[in-house]
Image (cartoon, rainbow, N blue to C red; front, side, top):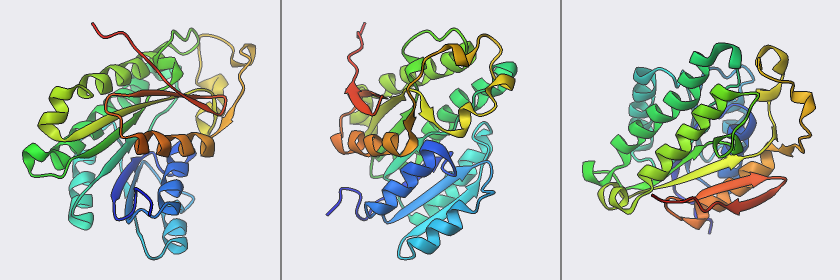
Length: 248
C-alpha cells in the first residue's frame, strides 16, 4: 500500500508543469483527494483527471495565490470538501523579471499565503492532524543567478521560510514537517517566451541540461516519503541530492 493511500493533498499551480505532474503522481500512487489551486484551468486538467481517476476526488479552485483572501477561501472550501488536509505542495510560480513586483508576489508571497493557510488548518495546535508542507524553491534559491535576480530573491526567501519552519520547535507545536525542493532547469512553460520575461542576460548563453517535469515530480514524492523535516533537496540532471546548509 502506498504511503499516500487515504490522504488528501493540495497542489498550487497544479494545472501545468511540475505541479500537474505532482498531481498525476499523487493520483497514480493512490491518494484519496487532491485539490488544484491555479489561476486558470484552460486545458480542463481537473476534469480530465477526475474522469481518469473517478474513484478519487479531484477539485479545482481558481485561485491567484498572490491574493491572501483567495488562498484562505480556497483552503476553507477544501477542508469542507475533504475534511482534512495531509500534504500541501506550494508550486505556483512565474518568471518575469520585467515585472519584479508580480514575480515576488506570486513566487514568494504566494508561498507564504499557502503555507500560513496550511498551518491554520493542519496544525495540531488548532485541532488539525499535522502533515507535510512541501514548497518548491529552485537551485536559483541556493546560488546567485545573474539573469533573474527577482526570481532568485523570491526563491531564496522560500528556502529561508521552510528551513525556519523546519525547526524542531515548530514541529512540536504544529506536528507539520517542512520539505524544500530546489529543481534545476526543467522543461516547463515558465521558460517559454523568455525574451519578454528576462531583462538581465541571455538564456541561450547558459548551457542548461533540461530535465522533465515528470522526473522532478517523481523525486518530490520520494522526498515526501523520506518524511525528513527541514530537509532541502536539489533535483537536477535527473538526480536528487540532499543539501546540507550551515545553521547559525
